[in-house]
Image (cartoon, rainbow, N blue to C red; front, side, top):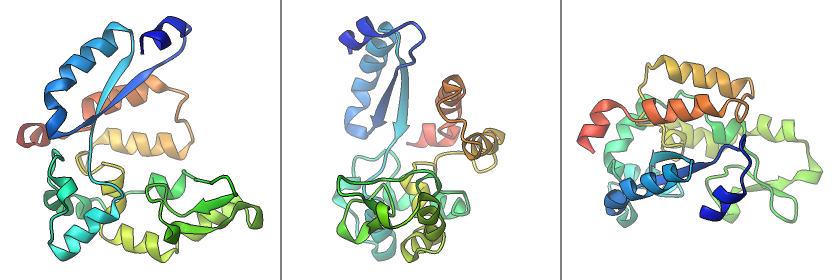
Length: 200
């Protein structure tokens, strides 16, 4: 990190993303201090278990996933929060395309199993891939329970926040990366609802 700080140009924006877990809470202030000392933005994120279908399995069966014990928001508690937001758009479905070295493309960037492969990029087009996702059984099942909300860690965001609407427009217009200050401000100030900060 020190070497990156030394070599970066003045106009280069660098962000340190911090995954928040129970076990690393005591280290977060130290990393924030170090990142900001180097002139980097520091953005902590709520986290969950991956891939997100493990959370969906816990919701369906009631059997706790051991990997969820360090999440700030327990997997079971995230269920209703995700259901309440299931109609929100899925960035993974609408904007992200993962292709391996053989040209195979996956349906969801949050999963890596063989059942997630949908074909070869050279046999189709990018618009067609995104169009088919709208009716893909895996996507429909995931969105029905708000699985995409869990995958994107958006269940801690306010349901009615004006900034969420602004961010949706921002993403829809393809403006990501053009105004990093907006993304940084929105994440730092509006990512977690006040009651989530207090409760978890």
